[in-house]
Length: 429
Image (cartoon, rainbow, N blue to C red; front, side, top):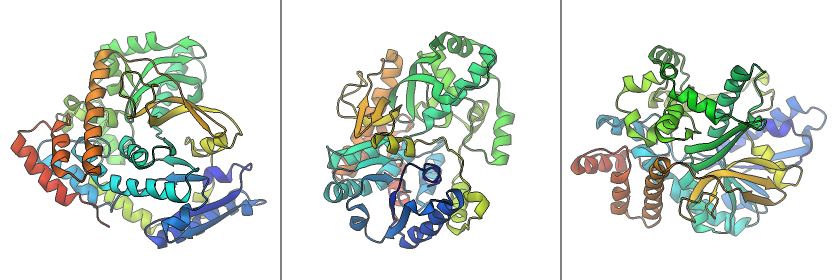
């Protein structure tokens, strides 16, 4: 809504839906204040309302944005802490690994319902999904409504662009360019995405990145920095050392944050101390719980609602679909050939053009075989997870669970952990 308040070319109605109706009501007040503070002369160009029933909220919608927490925050406790009892460490636990699979088990039934409701109430609406696990939630919408006009959005690639923009400033002695000037050829799946080509103003940056990745001085021990970040609760910061390590080892730069990349490759998560060396930390459940409570109880001061242009692209996407501009960006969509090494019909992340009522994916370059092999395993596990949840088949879900790279346990221990997590991580509010 802050981004909308800065965009004077749009008007209309914002309808809020939350299973907690009071939360939606509270956000009407927040939204109205945002527009009054940031667009004093034309703040009434948007009306904001809440609906108690999802059908009413979706009826005649032009654009649907899905951004939810599937279940109460307390559900995430088991996602993180039960695997830890078995020696399995997760930095995030919302995409892959035991925690990611359990989060999918909570989220996907909701997304099957969302997809059917969109098909019924607003079949021509464009849909943007922000919810993790991104790949599986997006796939669930396509599963029930194959013709849905949908893309999944994630800002992880933006962080890689910022990282490289800072390197460009250093390498070429220029002001730090806007991240959008860093052109990446993106391929893979959400949070396990790789850049096969990288350019700035027509200059190929890959030789310099390879040189950086192969320089031993690049991988200085960042334990002290990690501990400082823990102290300051800067859980989401990283130095992209794992991304560079993947370039060095496997031949392509990881294009997501290190905290996500690490979870797909278990040898980065052997111990807390090993993670700290890369300058990254595991986000503790206790912090998530505290922040959740603080957000629910928060009352915004006016100065907190003053808008500045964000780095998110939701409004840019909306403007592009309205025909006001064309946007080239990364997106999660069904594979129709844009990622040649992955099966057709699976959800992949690559670049594409967004323009008036149109999304056209761009064919990406194939990464080295080592990268393809790593990604294909995850795609297969995710596809098995999707089908198991769709069919309500817990044994099939356990099979997918055991094949996840992080689940390096004897089968009886994997079963024990799975059974515990099925109880502790079930959907509840």
